[in-house]
Length: 384
Image (cartoon, rainbow, N blue to C red; front, side):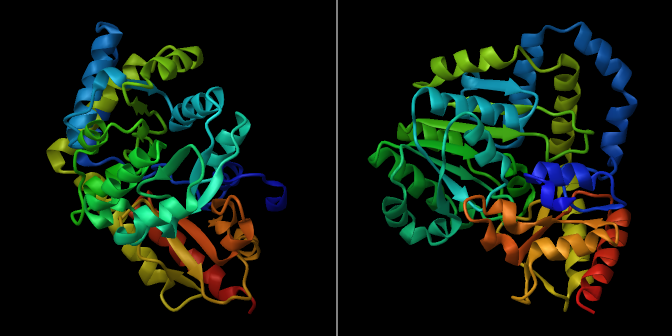
């Protein structure tokens, strides 16, 4: 079955049918105390949305979202909303194709990014993530490797958890300096940025102040989908520099009208709840589950790779070079455990991903402990 699957999303669909689903990064944990109160108020939120102008709900959502993230200088009038990050990515890809803009895309990354670009006729060129690892060499490495019109990064990155924030402000400053000096469009997927916000080692500085102050042309993609347990009700945000806005807006309106007013209304309550609890409901589940995974798999074939940011996925290296991720994954399926092989994340050279698997962490902690215990059983039985 798995040999016929063409991308990670198809794997995730299969994983939804399994008992121990550690594949998709969607939020499957239970509600916190504050979130349960929001759920109890859903009928009131429905009628409130029904009685409120769409534009007012959009403005309120943008305001609380960017306030939570500390992006106080963002120009909300250049922010467009959609019901999924993949739709925002599609709009960005359509803009790139319309303008015949070539693009360098970070590798590894989740494969729907190169897939969406391919599907609109854009052929991304890979840029290795390690080009960004040394803050003092970022500029020079980008000069060496980026020969396209645009640079497309994911920060924090999925699956590795790497972030330019590990360099403080300097990482983003160097990337943006390169883009300005060499007239590159900067596209950045920030859909996992909430985990940097929740990680006490990081937080976020006002990136939009830096972007707008630099004069760089940019498209920034943000999302709620990987942050709160909303049963896949979500909203994505596309914000662009003023010089791109008219063209991007015209593409955006050809794709959709709006996001559900009800969804915007109750999403805003979840954002406000995270402002009140300092992101504790997001941080605590991920931290507990990462620790549980490390403990359960210690000494096994799978070696945990510490992420820069405590994102909602864990990246493991297969320590035996003779074991391939695709073969291990097929074996684990016999134990009703589903993880993602690293192959698809290395979208230009899948063979490089045979040394890695990804485990999703956004699960109820009790269910997650049972899943990683079962995962350990399956891993230990491989080749036995």
